[in-house]
Image (spheres, one colour):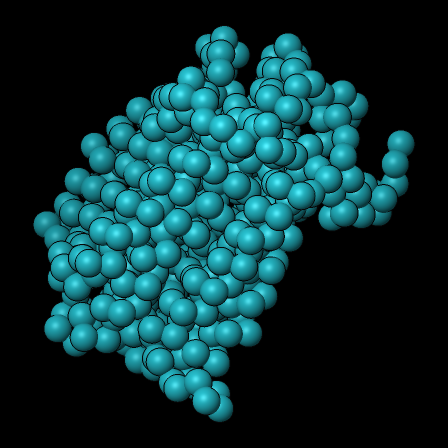
Amino acid sequence: MQSTLTVILDAIKGKERDYTTGGLNQALIILAIPMVIEMFMESLFALVDVFFVSRIGVEAVTTIGLTEAVLTLIYSVAIGCSSGATALVARRIGEKNPEAASFTAFQALMVGVAFGAITGIIGIFMAEDILRLMGATPEVIATGTNFVRIMLGSNVVIMLLFLLNGVFRGAGDPAIAMRTLLIANGLNIILDPIFIFGLGPIPAMGVTGAAVATTIGRSIGVMYQLYNMFWGKGAIQIGPKLMKIDWGIIRKLIEVSVSGAFQFIIASASWIFLMRIISRFGSESVAGYTIAIRVIIFALLPSWGLANAAATLVGQNLGANQPDRAEQSAWRAGYFNTIFLLVVSALCITFAPLIMSFFTDIPLVTKIGVMTLRIFSIGNVMYAYGMVISQAFNGAGDTRTPMIVNFICFWLIEIPLGYFLAVTMGLEVMGICIAVPASESLLAVILIVLFKRGKWKQVNV
């Protein structure tokens, strides 16, 4: 058996292997390590932006919070399409048909470009209206309109970044997705202070500079993805003969992706409604909640790496006609994720005041942030299995089941409960903080019960 160090090095290097044979623990480690790093780097985008922008003022942080709430709709579609691409590509790889997987990847690329272009144009022209709709104050609208315009105008880049990384994960090449985010985020970290505060001939752009830096970093990351798709040496290799539209595959991709997108849109729309409720309690409440959520995402997204690893293993093993191995992959990933989130949650609960001190010294903002960090961390432990099982359904191509469960837990329970606790009961932000982990814990229980029934094993994609 390979030593642990060798396995880790293989994972980072992106060494090709067959994930339908061999030990599951080793397969999970090799897939999860680059996926964890990828998710870690993706979470840094918003965290780095809010770190530097918090030096400008509350209005600037509020701009990022409100904009990110809207952008989560775009992220939701991108992640949904990514789930569809992962499922289809993983099945073809499991069937030992890399050419069909590459052909599917090209169809996914076309879908991403089309959707990103349409929504990007809408975002450019409606930036100010979007902020106003989100309940932004006149000061926030004046400060943040250009930020929103640039962020939403770059939707093609956002779509492709998520979608193509889903393709690489499905193909069992997560190291490419990892390197993409390392490049994109490394540039964002370097460029953020330059464009926000100014350097030499580059003027200080304030919060707008964060959007410029993020967009440049993501764009170069997408260029790296395209290079690997068309000229790389991995499982996905798109040559001239594969560069044609296949409406049958696009329809199947959209069919799987629509439910996947809606499950995340449902969750994101819930997020927008909750942010709209929080905006009733002032900019300090929005800022404190926003900073805390960025920290939570930073801590939580790496665990999505384990969930994505489970999705790849489920898809490839179903393609190889090994449903029992597919199921074992999900349970094993859930177990590891629970251990990970226990540690992370304990750290967030213990060091919440210290964490918030890195971002703000405003007492009310700090108070709201500390409370949010602690309450959410309690719920994350319950949600550990939920995120893995949800992705396992997606990896099998059964995106409909998580969509329905999301609708029940987020729209029928989380939003009404959040409003009741925050407004009717007068708990304000604390009410939202209680409603979110309660709903996500219920979602985890329902998904586990449905997964045990095993109907997902019969889905054909």
